[in-house]
Length: 357
Image (tube, rainbow, N blue to C red):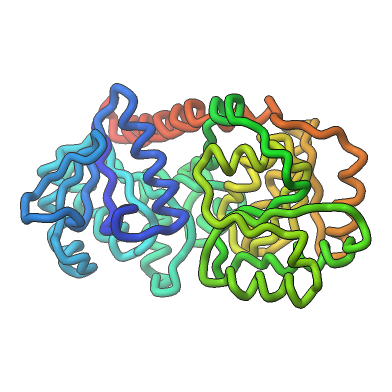
C-alpha cells in the first residue's frame, strides 16, 4: 500500500500537537512494508523537487508555504505520487476540501485526520470536509462528537487514540525525585494554575512536584508558584527527552491533567502507563476524562475526575493510600504497534469502498 500524506507544513517548519501526531504515524508506517510519501511545501535547501530524510521521501508541492499556491499545485502533485490512499489533516480545511475532487478524479480514497478546527477554518469548509471524506480519523470520542456535529456520519469515523512506546516504559530507569508531575507544552491552554492552587492547599504536607515542558506561559506559571509560596518545592524541568520524561513519570505517584484544550491527553496516557494515579480537571474542550473514566474497559484504571482545586487537593491526598507503581501493563493496548494496525485497518476500509481490494 502506498500512502500519500498531504500537509503544507511538516515538523521541520511548524510544531503543533497535530503535526507531532502525524509525524509519529509517518515514521511508524515507514517502518512497515508499506510505502510512504509526504507531499508538503519545500523546507529543504535547493530547488530539487524531492528530498530523502531519515528514510522518508518528501515531495515539494510548492516552495513558498503559500496556501493558495499549495492548493493550486496539489492536483498535479497527487497525480505524480500515484497513491493508494491519501491522508490529510482537517486543518486548514481549505486544503482538505480541495483534495477531495482530485481524489475523486484519481479514484483514490481520502482519509482525513481530524484533530481540531482552526480559528481561520470556515464553517462551510469544515462541513464539506466532514461530509465528503471517505474516512475520518478522530483521536477521541470527544473529537468524534465534534466531527459528527459538522456533518460526518458515524460509520465514516474511526477513533484512533495516540500511541506510546511501551518498550521504552519497560526499559527506562526510575527517577524517584518527585511525587507529583505535570507534563505538557506550556501555552495559553496549559492551565497549570489549578494544579498549583491544589498544591498550595497542601503546603503543610510533605510533597515535591515537577513541571515538564516549555512555552510562552512558563514565566507566568513560575510567578504564580512564587506568589503561592510553593516555588521552592516545584522543579521546572523544561523539555526532556523521552527516556528522561518516562523516568520522572515512573518515579512519580500522581500525574496532574488540567489543560483546557486536549483533543487527546497524550501526556496523561504516558503518565497512566508509567503507573501514575491520574487526576484530571474536567474541561469542556478536553478529552482527558476519557482516560480516567474508562473503568468499563480497564477496570483497574487509577484516575479521578475533579472540578475544583480543592477537589484536586483532596484526590492527591486520597492517592496516597494507593500503592506506588512504575508501570501499568494494562496500557500496553496503546503500544505503537497496535495503533499502526488500526490505521492500516482504516486505510483498507477506505480502499474497500472504492473496490480496489
